[in-house]
Length: 495
Image (tube, rainbow, N blue to C red; front, top):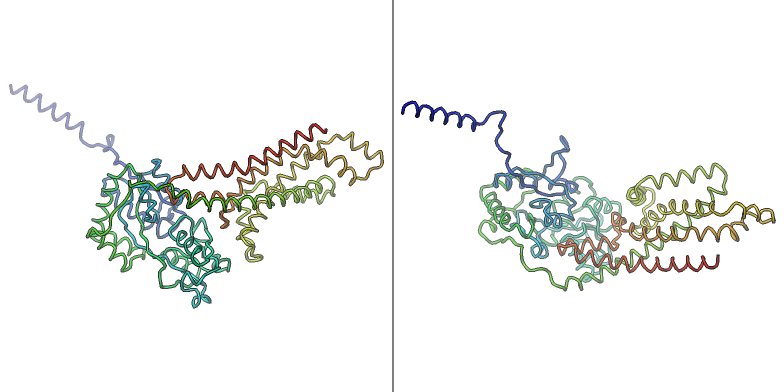
């Protein structure tokens, strides 16, 4: 009996010894809380740490850390474009999104939304010389007011456009609106007060009007199916407000003020509610946004025709210069073609609109036409050069033997045949340009794709906006393709 007990004791010690933590057997890793944000938005929300760019910092980073610790998880940051946070959280790219995400009725209808954890004020920033006359939005009738697209501020500007004739100007970031304000391209900027204060410190030359235009709140957004996780996050946010954790975070980032204390009191007392998993937005969304989509489609069409006309004209000159011009001119034109084709069109748009601003301040639409036109001119010139060189050299020699001048040969023989060769690739280029026009939103031109993105962000879904956008693009491009095919068939018969 004693021997049996001894053996059992030894076995128990062996089992315990195997289960004990050793260097070769580390404890299982904690689950992660994946949260999405946009580090491009910068401080104090989310920014790359200058000491270690692989690490992010900001008050949203610290709040995400509080939530992760409360859930016994390890926070893991996922970079995502700010306008794509809602769509990405629904498709499961991360658990929750936090990066200055605004609390809106549309977002509550489409997603699970936490309690508000920060109160912001929409404020007007103007140049000091205009501080006395541009105090309110209604004072800016007929003036250009900049903001970030798909935000509460943008919706306010759309309402002011209908009510008072304010001209909204949408940007893809919250930095260039203020630099354009200083340079005189816009007359005011409407954005959150902490963004305006950051711009005032960085840029200078700005006056922030003290009277807020509106008040809003930042929240964390989760997928509709994650209401349980949302409820846990709400409890943790309430606890962090009650014990002073959130106040310490906001003070550390110099964004604490009296309005945050009042918000925290309301939340802890139950005066603010989280939202989400409610009813979907009704069909009225389509009727409300369709006129804007059609106007943006008109901008896309006009921009594309003007840019293509410029591309054709410059492309013909470049192609003729490379074939008929002296060697020096041909080398310069070849350099132009290679530089334009070898650099991104986005970079070219930025250089034309922002880089040339100290020398010449182009309107956004004109800069878009020039940018796309000069870019596509390089590709068009290669099409025309190839088409001109595809004409049989026997015909050219025969024409020269008959005494035709080079200009006559080009006009009567070489040019008409080259046009037949070039028509199909020209049509393809125009359809491509029609789609590439979506890139000009980076210089504040609201075309079809940008307006669709604003629509999709506001309703929290890309399904219906994307379908409408595709239909409009097809309605614009298919007739052009059919016209090109008809011309090809007619000229083929004549040939």
